[in-house]
Every structure is written in C-alpha cells, then in structure tokens.
Length: 269
Image (cartoon, rainbow, N blue to C red; front, side, top):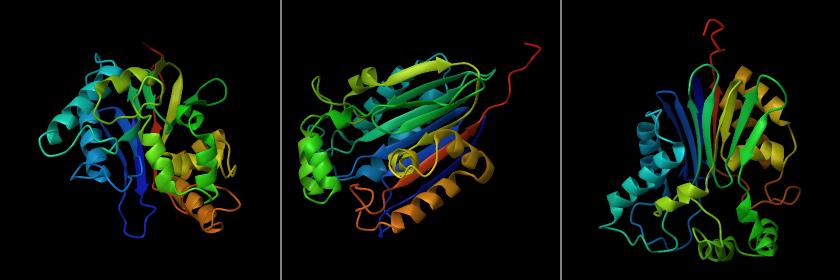
C-alpha cells in the first residue's frame, strides 16, 4: 500500500484543522469542525486532530481490531489526555470527521467513514464506490443555506449544530464520546485498486464545483498527486471569493487528500 498525502490550511494564518497520515497499511484523513467562539478546551482543534490521528494509526495497525473499536479506543484515549484540564462536557469541545482505509492484503480493504468526509474506492470492476455520511445536512437546512449565502452568520449555524452533535436524534462526529464509533459507516471491500480519502475541502471539486468526476479525481490523484487536487480546488475557490457562484461557508476551506495505491492481488494465492 503506497500513500501520498497533501494538506493545506485555508486560513491566512496557516492554522489547519485538517489532518492526514499513514502508517503500517492504514491511511487516515480527519477534518476538524470549525470552532465556535468558545470550546471549553485549552488545546484547540489542530491539537485534537493530531492526537486522534496518531492513535487511529497505532490502534488501526491491529488487523484483528474492527475499525469501530479502533475509533472508539482512539476517542477515549484522546479524551483522557485532556479530561483534567478541559471541559469535555462543553458542546464546543473540539471534534472531527473521520475517514480510514486499511489494507488487508490481496486488494481487499477495510474502510470507515464518520460524518461528511469521503472515501472513494477504486474498484477493478465498475464505477468508484463513494462512501460519505451527509446526515448533518438533514438538520437546520435553512440555516445551512443561509450561512452559505452569508445571510446567516456561520457562528449561529455552529451554535445550532453543536446542540445536536452526538445525540440520538442528531448527527455524530469524533469528539469525547466513544459511542460515536457505532454510528460510523464501515465495510470490507475486495477488488480495490486504490482509494482517495478526502476532507470536504477537496471533495467539493466533485460535489460543489462539478469540475471533475470521481473517476477523473482518482486519475488526477494517481498521476499528479494529492497536491494537484488541492491546487485545482484553490484555483476554483479563488475565482469565486465571495462564494456567490458556488454558495459555501468559506472562500477557502482547509483541504486534505490521501491517495492510496494497492498492490494487485497475487494470482498464486
């Protein structure tokens, strides 16, 4: 399994709330959710995604551990790191989407997706399999549309979404409750040639800008690398700095992509 990763902040100050990493046949991309004015945490979202990502790689290296258990364990470990210094009950405590791809050998992978980042699986037969969870879009759709058009403040939307995060009648992200892992989309898929793990700051090339298709996104990633996907994203974002042609929350979002290539199956096995 060969992995190339690129990650770039969308902010002028360079603060990046995304994270990407790979080790031991496991690739991870995290998209930390935009913070509100108060978080109850002295560390911040960039710290949270670094800590969570490191633990996902370590725990995920155990091929016998289901990815839901890997995620639950990582969430619990990170919560333990700052339970004595931060208010983990605060609704604005740092949190993140999660994508994981794990190589099981012979062109078979395990995958996990929690919330609205994406895993795009390049299968030998047929169109790419795209896995994402957009359940957050079911809540406060009018506010989401208003924030994208700048008619509603982003802070107001964040406040409304915080009230329904990690609740039975809401949507789930990695934060402090390990039970969030039970709400992830998971699976094992054979016949996989490669994959892309994308924060929504890159997947919008397909979903918002409609500049490429999923097959062409994979082709660009394989041939030119994940940095090229981010470059194309920035190019389009900068043609619409006021977010009028393509309504969205920010001119530039943090953007992270991991491009995975798997060895072909061994015909003698």
